[in-house]
Amino acid sequence: MTKYTNFDSFQNLLDKSTFVVKSAEDFRAIPDEDWNNYIKNNTCFDSWNEMQEKAVQIYIKAKLTL
Image 1 (cartoon, rainbow, N blue to C red):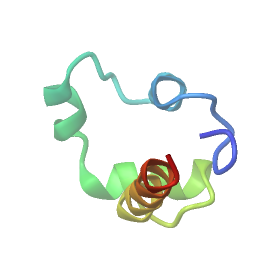
Image 2: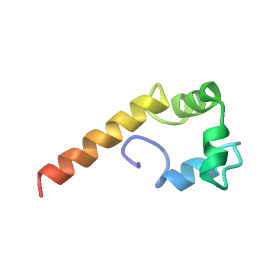
Image 3: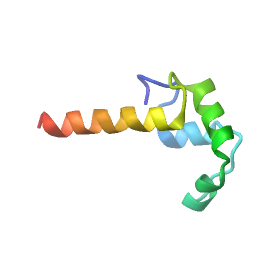
Image 4: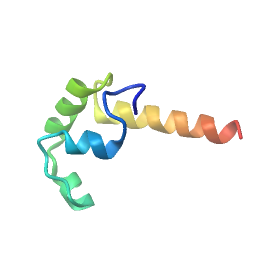
C-alpha cells in the first residue's frame, strides 16, 4: 500500500475516506463513481479496478517466487 498510496493499509485508506464502512455490505454500497474518484485522488491509480489489478499482480509474483 505504501508504495502506491499515502496509506499504510487498506483499513487506513477506508478510515481516511468520507465513507462509513463497517461491513462488506457498506463497502459494496459505495457508488462506483464516488469510490473511483476517491481512489484516483488518493492513490497513483486511475480507478479501483486498476488498483485491484496491480494488487493481484504483486500477489501472484510473490507466490511464484517462493
